[in-house]
Image (cartoon, rainbow, N blue to C red; front, side, top):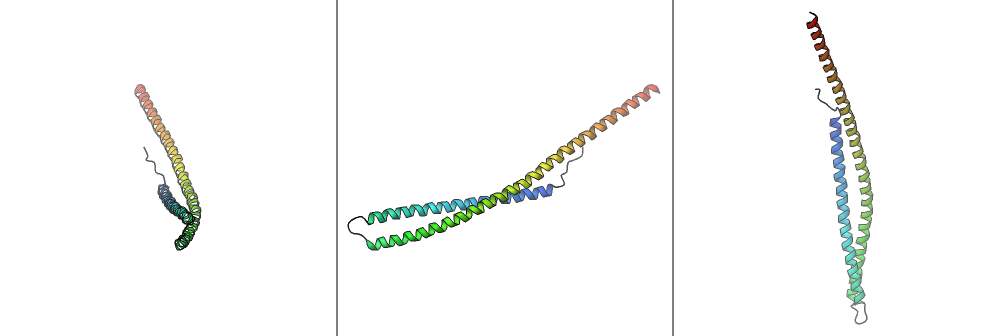
Length: 153
């Protein structure tokens, strides 16, 4: 029986490697997005605590003006950091979507070659089955003719 050999196996292997690289790139971007989300949550929680502190410190009675000014300045720093992280998150979301599309394209390229390989393997198996059937028919024909020769001779 003839061994099946897909001529594009090397290309298929390269496409699979490319797909795997693209998958890793997407995973890295998703991990970065999780880090940004955690940083944003931390800053938002810190801002909330700071606002609660400022509300309590501004209650009637003796107001620690210097502490309130420091807290307000720190709150502005946190707001700027939050804005910067939101911008980064927005850019990262676009990059994640781009990487998803690239992964889809790489996956499609692999699937096309896998489907072609599957069709070629099926075709090879069918041709091999026909070849074996022809050989079996020839053997039967040869035996019949040798049997006829023995009976006639």
